[in-house]
Image (cartoon, rainbow over all chains, first blue to last red; front, side):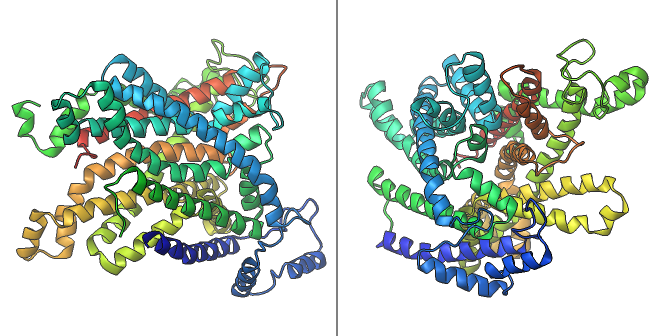
Length: 304
Length: 314
């Protein structure tokens, strides 16, 4: 029942988000035809505006947009002519999803053991070294890490390709550059959760009853500490799967992240609103999935 | 914890715990040193004058293009033969300025928003928090790009900028920290609301209300001082995030405009020069190194503050 209500609530939320994104981009000065290679003559520009209904009042345009949306039509891009927004998303999204999915696997595969290890060795040098690594991962921006990886592994050593996205060899450096920030976040959240859980009464009780430290760590402390990590995966995956402008542009990967930034810079109205809706849909869906997973992971949690 | 610190005020206890943390002390020293160098460097250039100042003028284009680190140019020079050491220090002013004021903007909005939502409750709370939910679901990059370009366009035609072209750089920086602050207050608002909600039902607040204290008095005398630690902690954690975001925007070409530099624009210039033939490593290593070191120190400081104020456990 609770989840049905949440799903029902998502629809007005998406409506508001689309309206907000629509209003936001239409309020911004300039228009999608300002940055053409050659400045268009006034007649051409007037015709272009008429073709995309930009000469109508904004509320009317929004109504038209919603009508099209109900038919599953996200409209046509105003910058990449002859391409519909759905086309561009259909082309770029699978690439971004693969890149983001790999980055997610990488981040959790390294971040979880790192967080576990630092928490288990709290206050000793492995903790300091591991924690430093985790903060470092958070602090190195991807536009520093990506060129550094290219310099070392592609140019100096020549092991991996510099860019593009065709063979499995191309899919090693970009997920690392994209995922490293989340390694740090996952490790830090897990460490904090484990330290908190280690002090709780049920752990003390279990220890008093003579449970071994290893069983205690894996079966009790880790399980509870995983919960905050799980709730972090919602926004994390939404970020990862919609692509990253930096990583995609440095490695020249044809994903959706480049479009998100470029369409905003060009004020490509339907693209921006469409991509905003996609992001919001992903975020809402993932948060819902996380909350659903919570009821299964933590029997104490009950939603009425 | 010994007897003496048990009787100290919460602020004093936090300070004692804060000082015991070695990484925090080290980070504080690093940041103070950086601040001192940033402030002293322009003065030194003015006082020394002559060749020294000319050599290290961050904006002077010279023939010494892409020369590596040397006794003359400690961090080497860039594409236009400008001294990188100087450019990093002048860029630091901009990056830190935007970070501090951006975090300040997010602090003010976040605390007010969260405190009002938590304290007033009911429909107001529901409305304010739905706004936060909605803004959360919008990709922040869209919001910030539209905000920055809109503000930029508006300010370009204002009298201030038309009167003096030098004002444009300053206006751009103001716009950047307002824009970045405006997108970074959401988490702060959520945390503060939770804290206020918990505080509101505490006995001492009830007592104060029974004694006839008004909303304003309770808010400013009891609630706000009690969320001070949390607010400071999250501001300290927001600061590096904003510096990072600014460098990202500058990297996109939306942030600070040349000839002015920030750490982000310096990094972008370094990345542009990557090619397989000749590696100008200093263009990436030095700006990146200073940026990462500063972010590290700020993060440690934020974590230290959180431990000191014991934010999580209450």
